[in-house]
Amino acid sequence: MPRCTLTFQLVYGNLSDIPTIKPWVTYAEWGKTYGDIMHLRIFGQHTVILNSIGVVRDLIERRSHIYSDRPDVPMVNCKMEWDFNGGLMPYGPLWKVHRRLFDRAFKPSASVNYRPIQTRKINDLLHGLLTSPMALKDHYRTVAAAIIMSTVYGYDITPKGDYFVSLAEDAVSKLSESIFPGANVVNAIPFLRFLPVWFPGAGFKRFANETKKLTRQMRDVPFEFVKKGMVDGTASECIVTELLTKFDKPLSDEDVRVIKEVAATSYAAGADTTVSAIGTFFYAMTMFPEVQIKARQEIDAIIGSDRLVTYEDQVSLPYIEAIYREVMRWRPALPLGVARCTLEEDIYNGYYIPKGATVLMNLWAMSHDPRKYKDPELFNPDRYIDSNGNLLPDDDMYAYGFGRRICSGKYMASSTVWLVIASVLSTFKIERKKDKFGKDIPLDDQYTDTLVRSIHLSF
Ligand code: HEM
Image 1: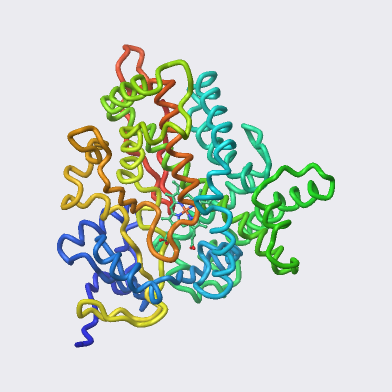
Image 2: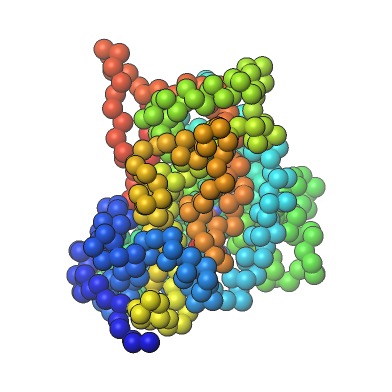
């Protein structure tokens, strides 16, 4: 096979050409000219962008032995000490240990055990929305954090200014700011990490030093809380107590460290992503009120108004399931997934892909591909429903990624988002804020451009 370098050499040594605002949209646009697979080169670093589901299945799934590594992001791994995070870790023996524990904690049969906690916390959300609807975003941030803190650490957070949540949120927001290609110069020019903090332009080092402290605290403080509770006999049953007490062999210090890291990664990976999906749901409901009306008709017909929706109702509510699928498609929380890296060189359809290349899956492009989704910008749950009102079998879910590093928390995440959608629609009508003349105040599509994107909502 000819070794043609896969080269759409758009940027060579010109960082400012890398889009930092909605790069997924720009990459999808470029894809119309250059195809489903594209290559960028920044200071000699190869980045390959996959714009279609076909290419993703061929490479990320069928050649997963090559495409399951993560790139080294110097700012994050080295300087901010996020290298404990199983989601960012290189593919290898340590990642496999982390992944085994994740899968044990979040596999489908384990995830159903968290439903009572999810239900309780989502009921708290409904209560919050009833008593202070203007604090909408605080309420749904709280529900995502509360579910994870309770399942992982057996800890019930306080709704405002919780210490553990503040630690984790501060550390995670710094992570998100520094991980995007093009968003932080040190990721593109690794040698910068060796400069002293006082070097002109080395402000990133100060940023990293501040963050390091937070990262350590978010990992250690809640874990120590559980350990102390286990000694005192006050710890609630949770993922950490389960892993510490039912490990398949006597625990070494290394095992305890891994359990602590898996717990901290769950918050880092699961909180903002869940918040993003719930925010998208509220946003879509204000933009497409006809969807709310149809959903309420379904809920009224199946559930009535005497009780709240439960997980047992899931199979009887196809339209709610369709809304969930559309939320995940319309505005994926991680539009470029989490970057992969090639473990070996590869040749695909005549393209040469070097070892060590960064690979981005453009989940946004795939879920907005008009060849599969007609009018992709339209929030249209009916695209998953057949003419008899039944759900179509097509439940392709791009938002959780693919292959060996597909999201470990997807079962828990999907059941949280589903129950939020069903519960809110069965109890509330969501409307835009009105101005003093009673007219709707327009809402902009104001999503952040960070790793996990979320909407700024004010109703
Ligand atoms: C709606 C919510 C969520 C979305 C949209 C989401 C999406 C994703 C995506 C796109 C990836 C990268 C997958 C890949 O590389 O192919 C990922 C990885 C991951 N997610 Fe999620 N996620 C969500 C919630 C959660 C939750 C609740 C948890 C845990 C409690 C979690 C744990 C993880 C972990 C540990 C990884 C790294 C997997 C690895 O590298 O082996 N996620 N997620």
